[in-house]
Length: 231
Image (tube, rainbow, N blue to C red):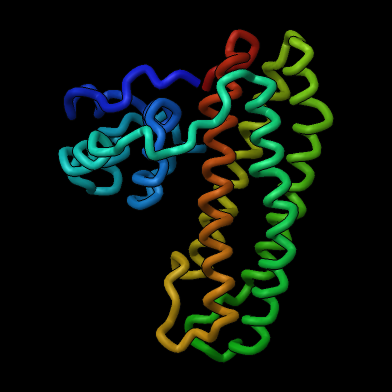
């Protein structure tokens, strides 16, 4: 990944670029997008102007916040394809596998203890279990099939990439469902330590998975765009 322009010169120049392009070119932009709940992973093909309008966000203020980012303060994923794939597996695949089972355990406990609480995240444990199962199947397909094909320089990657993109969209829908169950991870004033730990973990899952999908959709997959269909 090459950072061609750390900060676009004008609001207009920035407004015309897509969320995915900005996220892949400007380290730190994803934190701004998450702050304003802008979907830069599955919805990364939307221009900043349109995304801001959909959320009724002031474009000038959003652009100014993006321009104020110092890219030097953010870690940049590896540029070469092989190290990038290794980074994705280590930083995201392995972390999801390690952290999701604990989130399921915490959610099960919170639902059992606080079932009568009006803000209890009822159904969260089941939603996290489904996420864990579907994500594991997805990651196994990438590790066993897609990533080795990329590493080998295999042609005709359009179909497997299209399947992965479709599954990314499904992961995005599950994240939105989890956010709804947790009231956007906003805790009630009387939340116990376990409930608080659960929501910290859920917030990290959401952030990590969005970054994970972004790196694949907007950075890795376009390198094989000559064989991947465009949508």
